[in-house]
Amino acid sequence: MQQVKENTVFVGNKPVMNYVLAVVTQFNNGAEEVAIKARGKAISRAVDTAEISLNRFLEGVVKKEIIISTEIIDTDTGKTNVSSIEIILTNKK
Image 1 (tube, helix red, strand yellow):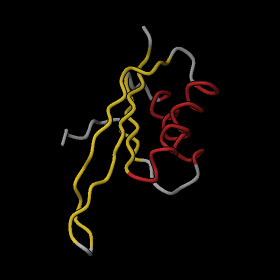
Image 2 (cartoon, one colour; image 1 turned 45 degrees about the vertical axis):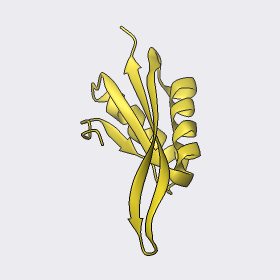
Image 3 (cartoon, rainbow, N blue to C red; image 1 turned 90 degrees about the vertical axis):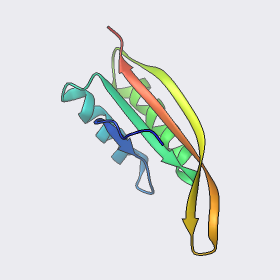
């Protein structure tokens, strides 16, 4: 697993706009790059977060990279595979 970057938004079960606000705030505070990470059922929310951020709120920001992977996590019933995604947005300079 990669180390966590400084400007990372972890997407969970909150409404999408909460994460969009977090992403926009990171860029407004001078971040050059923001990573949006999610696992499992939250992946679609992460994609929505990236798209809403890019299309409605952020000028001059583009998708730099999309990383998909599978993580093995421990659950009550043993180990299980969970899909994960990392969407990296960057300032286009």
